[in-house]
Amino acid sequence: MFSQQYLSELRLVFNANWEIVMHVTIVAVHVKPEHVDEFIRETEKNHKASIQETGNCRFDILQSDADPSKFALYEAYVDADAAARHKETAHYIAWRETVADWMAAPRQGMPFTGLFPKVTVDEPA
Image (cartoon, rainbow, N blue to C red; front, side, top):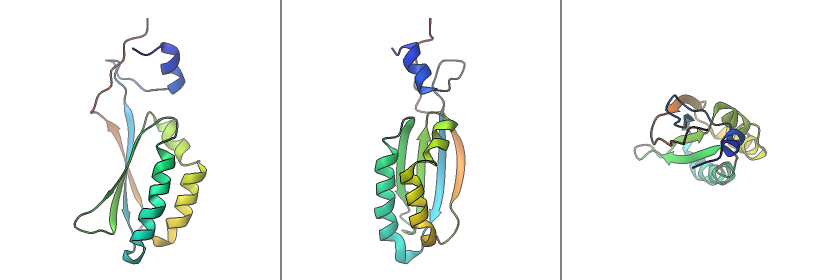
C-alpha cells in the first residue's frame, strides 16, 4: 500500500496493529463579540495555510450555535512533532499575534489521541 521509505519520511506513529495514531488538539476559543467577524477572517487564513503543512491531517474551525463568540479548532497531525512545527510557522505566529487582543479568555488546548477513523497500512517487510 505505502512504501516503507514513504512512511518513514512522514514519521508516523503506529499502534501494534499498524494503524496510524493521530495527534489531535482541540482548542477552545472565546472571542470578544465585537471581533468575531475579524477572528473568522484571520482564522480562515491560518486554516488555509495549516492544511498545506506536512503532517497535517485536518484543521477544522467550528463555531458554536449557542454562542457565536465561541469556537473550537480541531487540529489533527500525524504526530506531536508535526503539531509542534505548526506553532513555529509564519502563518500561525501571525494569526496568534493578530487575534491575541480579541480573546475574551485565554485559548485552551486539550490534547487527544485520534482513535477513529483508523488508517491501517501493511506491515513493512
